[in-house]
Length: 212
Image (cartoon, rainbow, N blue to C red; front, top):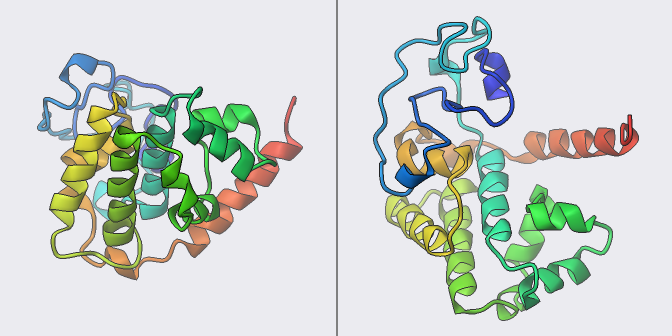
């Protein structure tokens, strides 16, 4: 939606960030280079900009819910599909398709279920458990209703464990990695409720439109 409002191309593009010229395909530089050239203007037909923007970039607020969904996806995709942790997810969410679980596609209520499930970390190895615990700390102390004083250290620790699992850097973890200062100070005052309603509606539309 952010890309749509700002006229960016959809899909896996070379320059998906609306704030800078982060090269999503330069994987050798990911987890190494944190500061990329600032994107001065959004010019149509340049740097994956497709059309004129509908709103000013200054009015864009990075959505906490969808950042959470994105980094959850990276955590799950880094898990071994042959491990006990993935098998635990399959038994926990029997109504979900295996393909979605492999791709790490979860909604807000499902993430809260796993965050509050004591059995889930017990199905992980040491490296996976470390990444999960730091993810939970990031969710509870930054991406939900409470923004801890030391949130920068918490987020940095999570990204370090995510890197240790061999996870790729997609646009949403990249926002945490290089644009943490762009998140509003009143992040805890924003509600996920409307975002989750939207996500549920889209999920229902996906089911109705399958094979079309």
